[in-house]
Length: 319
Image (cartoon, rainbow, N blue to C red; front, side, top):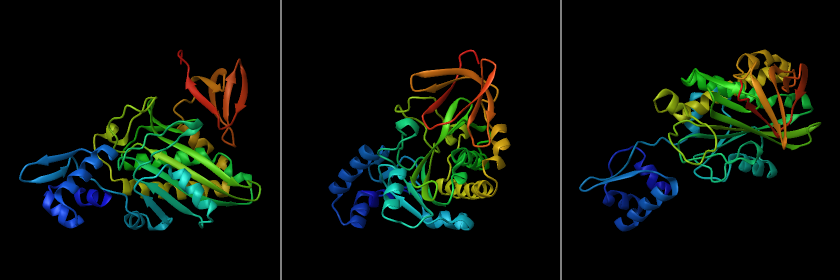
């Protein structure tokens, strides 16, 4: 099926006879595969009598060789899947099989993509970025302090470089344009944080997606914000460059090396918010973050600090 898709990806018309000859199957078998492509991957395929079949728009797939060519200085070995449950899940499986880090897992689509707090991450075929970078961490918790916020800075800067200037950050792991989510980050840790461990830096970016009924919050994409299509290989390369830059700063100086830059780009700085922790809600005003990446809130006139993977931050109605 994906061999057929690669024949059609140029967006030109291809006759059923030519497609059948290339695949070594009958024209009726080609027709069945085309219907399966439409149903399985949500693609739109035009049929014109006398001309053949054409994708509604050209399709450019992820290409590890092109990504390496665009960013040779940070060419992590990349494994690209046409379809996978989740790039983070695959990364964790590869760690368990002792696949040597660093390495990068990418996918054209995810069938069980996930975000923070178990939320579903909508992952249509060949439209967005589903990205998991695996790093080995030797000797120390300091290298993990505020790491998800560091990744957020790298994602934000990559999007700005690619032409989405209004993007900013929301504590702890969201990248927004205004109130709409454009990217999210999910870090997962395996091993002993005090000795040797592996961390999976999971990033999902809405790139060329224009519509979906499956997202339960406000969202946007690079295409919706700019009105143009983006080359996902260029974006992956740009993200690699930015991650390399920010991870190096973090390794040398800890999170405090980027703390002020993160605060400058926090869209909810100074805003009235509600912090949700399970069934508990804490109302306060965002003061910033501390040197470990924890959230600083003014609550009833007193500064308090909060951190943890199960916390959720929302704007208050009176903000």
